[in-house]
Image (cartoon, rainbow, N blue to C red; front, side, top):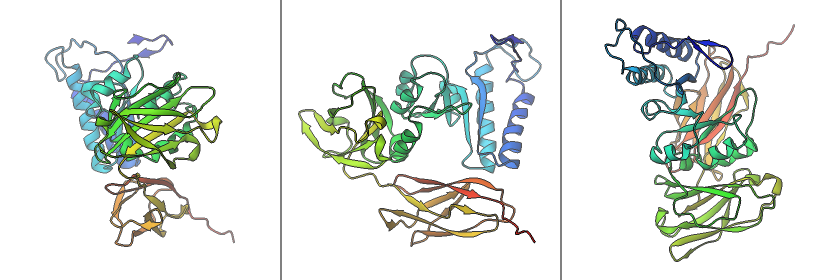
Length: 369
């Protein structure tokens, strides 16, 4: 056992034991994912604690350097097994490891001061921050296009605004390569920004956090050769506009594209912003469906963009994937045995920002006699 500062005893189980790995795989995949329809799980400590030495050689390993290899086998088997029951199952880890994070969906950054170095080196690895841990964690997460998690009801500052802001450009931002501050021109004091290059959407995105007490307009410069679009336009997504982009001036000056970040419409909601440079505006799918349904109901789902139907979009109702017809519609039938609770509706089609909304499935009310 290992004594912690809180006085708890922690038993570090040896991951080289196949019985222990199977125990975790069974409970996460066969019980929670299959039987309880859980769509995600965190394995705690696995990438945050240091490797231990196990001197026993009678339970699956011969030497003492097996720890990372055994944990890799564990993470891979859990994720593979869980996705047999739910293709959208998400597995994340406490802590960050180049070996383990590559086999999970994302990792929670819990210590150290150089997450930017890790993310720049391995941009394909998704990171998350515990935003209750310190005052600036949500700022770091926003700048790096990282996920954020909350504990005990905590919420990041301006978190709901930032969530809507990022969803407006989600597929382009989260699929982009993180370039940190490469190519950025000089910014006003107390304004931070990072660059993200999206090949799929032909866009350059700049995430901005403005710490100034008085927020005024300023120029944003970024090196022209970093932008996939040779002659881009620019759109400013302001926190106060609920994720709606506003067209702003963009011109080429020497080696830089120069755009104008406008003065905020609401200075109390102007901490976060995203500048997008692309040949055309990013288009987001909008989903229309009933707010509430009951098990056994049949209902219509439509996908559109700027008021026009989008045929052929893939739509997920929870973990069930269907395809919209030529008119951009889908009729979905819930089974009587489907569980109640919130379902995530998602629509995706190449070239569009995915649409999301919540569908509440509630028990059918029986009228009293």
